[in-house]
Image 1 (cartoon, rainbow over the protein chains, first blue to last red):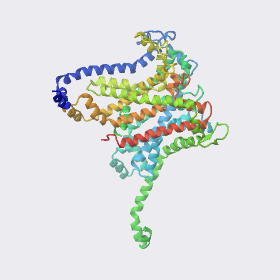
Image 2 (cartoon, rainbow over the protein chains, first blue to last red):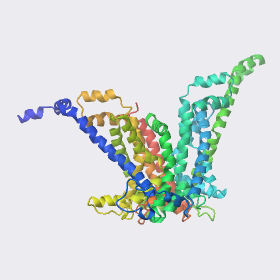
Image 3 (spheres, rainbow over the protein chains, first blue to last red):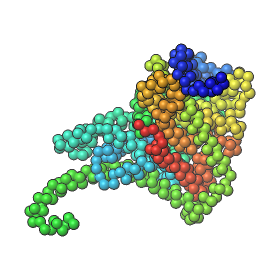
Length: 299
Length: 317
């Protein structure tokens, strides 16, 4: 008997249980369980932001009172007023961040589509070598170039100057890569037809190709803006006064060592600082997700 | 060869022969000029702000340089010094821990939530979950760290409030040598898992439903379907995510500054923080460059490995 049992191939058992009724019922339970898990995760993602916002509306002296409040009991905006009039010039910092982010985005949406178009649609000696070289710059972490860049900026007197962040930011391989991908997908006939009609290379690009790339260019602009707005590493090294500081630096100053700053005001300022990300998120989430995931999945 | 045959032809025939190629080549030349003009700003930016500084960093790593006097060539002294530097060992050790934790936790949670989200759910629900998980990724790491350091406070933070409420002991999240690292890992995972999740969701949607159905009909259970069919099909996304998380975690910087300032001691300090300290507080530019070059080599190898492996053992349909 025991021999017989051992001889039954285990594989033969699997189809029976697989086709049985319990397997059918499982999705129902599985689904509610997974929705519960997803809700739990989402609560974990949203709660810190909710706490930030609620705390920003609380009386500063009660900001740390426990139990925590999850919904604002009072709508007291005075922390916002206090935050912007405090010792750290948050408004000026925000203005600095905005100037840099806007300049960098404008530069990028001019230079990257042009280069991306050239790499996709024009022939010139050394094209592939140059492209691979550019692409390999994606492997160079900012930490390895920061010391020479610091010395360069110091030599040209650009330390503590927004130009130290704008100039390196207006070109970049990632944008070129994204736009090249887009232009590669553009049918060659469209380009040829424009050339036949007597348009020169610039006109073909400016009047035909670029308008078709509107979505890709907007996405690049938004990504570049957020990247600059969120940047901390290079600004923390190139800028060293509260007047020239960008918003992330200003907020860290405001927080103070070991979180000693007025937390209600810090949360008010953080709420303001997060607003652009929230706006981008509400307006452009779909494009950004599409363009970010595309290159990874389709490679 | 061509020149000798050409000299045998009459000037007129030569002209006729050259006519077509010449016109073509002038178009080609103009095309080439346009190509160079269009790429010029990007190439110049690349040379000044990436390639030049990279070469300079490699050169500086072979020198002793304190900004005030000219760099002095010292060969591989800086690299030899690294092996004796205990603080470097500590900070690199912390960083490798952050990298390991990021790879496992970010990818684990991202894949779990991606599989859950990829089920047939009401559209609004899918949209809501996707948005909720992705939003932290758009917010600067500094800002999320500022929020979290308040949540992590030992006596006033809400995390400990709930832990105590459940009967647990209050944890010194930011000032104990173990938990300061845990805090950094939590914030890193929390912020980045949404992006990795979106990559996984996009990949899961490309898995042919017929294949999954066929396997189910053949009697495979959910785990077998996932393990034998889904996982191999999304291997490219897995690879991409792992590479991105490794590169990102090696560069961890501002979250540690805001949360723990690297402390206590060096318990949570990352290697990038150490580079910045050596370079911009101690002005030991040569040594800092050498450490930075090691970081560059690691990131380059990881990226190249991804390119190579992606071609070989990744299912590349």
